Length: 215
Length: 215
Image (cartoon, rainbow over all chains, first blue to last red; front, side):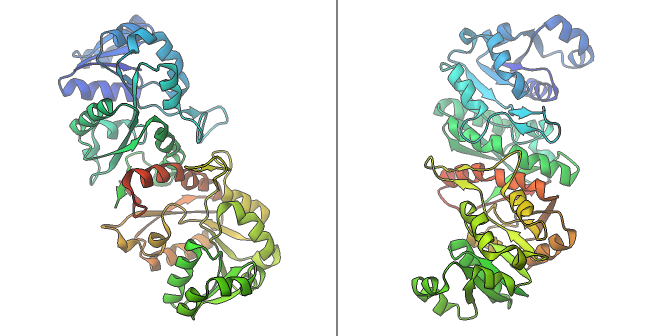
């Protein structure tokens, strides 16, 4: 599948690397490709299967777009990609609406009666937004078998076909338990998991954990 | 141990029944014991080991007090119990700050930059507040072995000795994995788990689940 990964941070790179390993045609979207190529030369030299383009060019050429930017930059980045490039596309939102303005641990800049995923869906009504993977650290997003046993991830979205496609992608990463929470408003749940994730990170001294929904 | 359980709802009864089974000396605290005894005659007839008293009398006679009221009523109930009755006591807060005023699913009336547990600790600085068990349904709070495998619960509080005592109590209920998140401010994490719990309840069609922190 032709996939655009918007964002060149730890999360974007982990996703891009894994998708390329799985033989997808991956383009990383960034603000200024020349600046990114120079800054991250080592990473791109090691990942020659991954292309680099502007946000708009990456999204335009893709069947599926992954928002791997930080939550605070998400709406600005999607605006740079443009609503034409996103229309009709499956838009996988894996970001968290973290607000670092009051120090650590961060709070959430949207929560409870709204979510970042809903803000994205409202701003791009023709995109098929699926919220997922914001609940665990980057290495585990793409390789949950690093953990001692199976754990759970979630999908939220209004488009059943888009959720099904994303669920298949998650299974190809190794996620055995993908729980469909419902429409895009259910993304409020996994986005509000972050405050507990942050305290667990502190208590366990490691981000290498995930939640499993035991029935 | 002499334990007061404040609240006569589903959660309070589940906790009181289980503590009595484990041979603790349990008094349920309520606003008006005569009204409660008459309304819940069947339950009290079936649980003769459990005493009934006013909030204040129940808390005064106890070594450990469990707040099993609903979050919206918690501060009012604790005021009825009185700061003298709570001073020096381990105060186990298992409530959730749910706001049903905008319909279902409920939102949280305090979150992210504060928590109900912290509000309680600030209002009763001489109580030794421990937040726990708000993350799962009543039947599983007191009997996690109903699930197919071990899952996780949390403790948050400023008093290490109080957390240790509560951890022992949780182990006696069957909780194998009790994670100490840190001071009382870390209760923001498990309180903000509720929005995801609510969506999982909807998606799974059952409250018989719990999270396990897989490392």
